[in-house]
Image 1 (tube, rainbow, N blue to C red):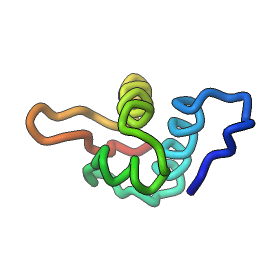
Image 2: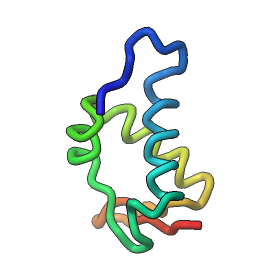
Image 3: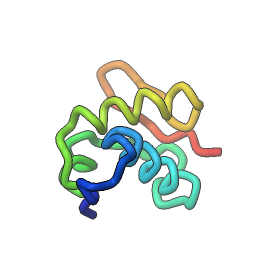
Image 4: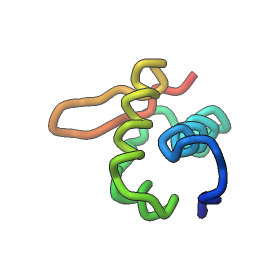
Length: 76
């Protein structure tokens, strides 16, 4: 996936929306770990917007950050 640089929405917001949609649509199963480097490669972005998007998703209880393990999908 490649994001349009002319899109007015911030990169973090676009990454957040993309990952959120994938969780809601079931692309990532409950209990699955999301790997920053893999997501960054898939979305063709750096890890910074991925990290920020995951923090926002954690605030919405869609994912949970587990120390020394990573970020796990909690689903809906």
